[in-house]
Every structure is written in C-alpha cells, then in structure tokens.
Amino acid sequence: MIDNLKIGASLAKQSPWALLLTGLIFLMLFLNQAMNINNVIYAVLLGQLTSVTLLAYWHGKGGIFFIMAVLAPLVLIIVTELPTFIALAWVINGFFFGMALLLFFYHMYVSKLSK
Image (cartoon, rainbow, N blue to C red; front, side, top):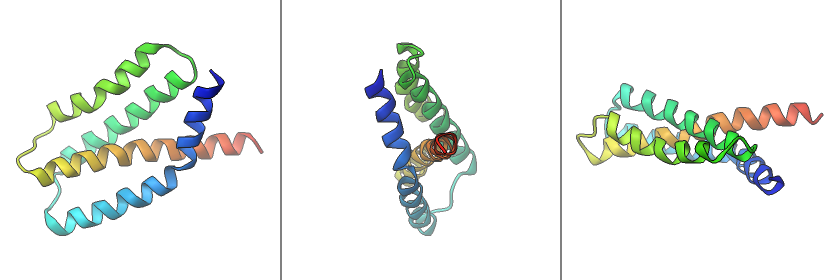
C-alpha cells in the first residue's frame, strides 16, 4: 500500500512537466489542424476521470478502480469522432493533459496539507 501511495505522489510531482509538454504539443497540433472542441473536452474529462480512479486505486479503494482507469482510454476512442490521424493526436494529448491537470491539483492539495 505504501508503495502505491509513493507511485501516486511521484507521478503527481511530475505533473507540471506533463502540463508543459502537453501544452507544447497542443500548440504544434493547433498549427497543423483546427481542433474539434468536443473531442478535446471528452478527452480532458476522461483523462481526469482516469486520474481519479487511479488515485482511488493507489489509496487502496479496490482493484475495480484500476480496471476502470484502464478502460477509460478505450471508451474515449469509442465516443469521439476521429476522421484523421491529427484528430486522434488531439484526443490522446487531451487525455494526458486531463490526467496531468488533475494530478497537478492533487499534488498542490497534498503539498498544502503537509505544511
């Protein structure tokens, strides 16, 4: 259990770098093709849902949360419209941006509690 909490804390600590990287990728994608706002919203929300379920799993709430976290990207690919490869890149990047954003807020919350 302690190892799981350390994994979550370690990932949350790296989340600012992930936000920066996904932001740069968003910029490059925007220069190539306009985004489908619905796809990006779905991606960010499901990325955040994945972070929440992984945090629940890491905090010992049960293995079903891990299974839900693994299934979230599949659900995302099913519900979004992907006419081009760039549209898929928008969705994947939005998913990881959503994960990183929620982990960043989690990191800020945990670091505030430890002070």
